[in-house]
Image 1 (cartoon, protein in one colour):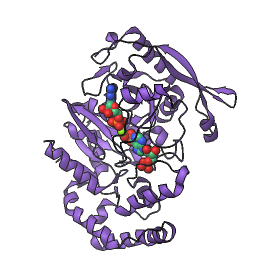
Image 2 (tube, rainbow, N blue to C red):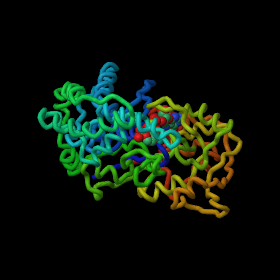
Image 3 (spheres, rainbow, N blue to C red):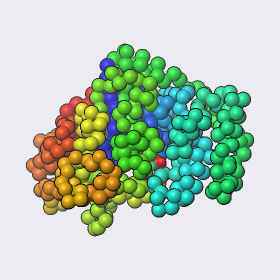
Length: 426
Ligand code: GDP
Ligand code: IMO
Ligand code: MG
């Protein structure tokens, strides 16, 4: 029966890794369905910290970890991640990968960096991991899939085709050296034998598992507002992290998804460029960054910080049909006398209670705040809702009201056990 999707409700780094891990041992398959190693999911298990970029968080529990067709795979990163985990005693032998997943090559990474530099102050602030160029090639029908690695002849033709146009751009527009197809082929072929045993018919495996009434958990990367269709375009990633992406990114039909869990931080953060109405550029923002250790898992960049924006999360709840929300990092808000929550925007002098349709309006939106009472008690040891201070409970209840979705779990610390469960998530 249950197909469960975990989706970021803001701009990423909400704590999807921890929330996914939370469902842990009751899950049979944990599937990454979109993005690539632009993601950084940090988990703390038995006091040990793990930063995962490409592997699903299920690698740390008993479920079968899966990389679906919707993911773009940098094989160097994949094997580095596997080796790193193996060295720490983590078993990665159950991992399966879709033959249809596309690979990220050196030329994607080069293109990512040169195009960002070329954009200057219009840059997106990408992670520089080659994500956008790899998805562009996929849509342009010039991509290389995992299955291509097993047919050298085809692989050569595809790499040559992909490089033909890029080399013109690299040399004539970006003033860089041309990339030889052989350089790319050598690297890809060197990985072919190692990846071959991991390749499986992921679509069939997952559908068979759902037929057996097992639990398949789809672990989103990035977030609703970074979605190329639904996010703050062009300041987005190049894939569909939204819940619907779990279907296209794995080959499971929408009727098989029973639950969509939105992961929302108790405040808001964003990495890279793009609009962010509740961003704090003052000492309060610095305090959130320091208290929440808001520095990127992938690039180490400072995360931009601001108050909880109910319009942002409500829009995600609507478009993804969240059945539940897991509210993370509530412990980080301890100690504020009162906590502003954005309940509306003022756009060109007019108040709006929902996210504006037009991007220009969103860029000019001024937050309208409601001030909720804070709390000073340490909540990191709380394990039930009743144990939370009254003001903390009221904060949670007010967010529920504003967003229009029940909050079923709350993160009160980075560790696996530091959660308050209100409703079961499976
Ligand atoms: P993801 O990309 O959505 O998986 O999130 P990240 O792992 O990039 O960022 C979330 C950070 O917050 C990580 O360092 C987590 O260990 C940490 N974290 C997750 N949930 C909580 C929580 O409830 N409280 C605290 N203090 N930290 C948390
Ligand atoms: P997780 O899964 C936060 C952001 C980048 C940039 C934009 C485009 O850890 O939540 P890209 O390299 O994807 O072309 O960059 O998207 N971005 C993320 N921000 N968390 C992520 O992943 C992100 N993945 C991409 O910072 O603004
Ligand atoms: Mg992250």
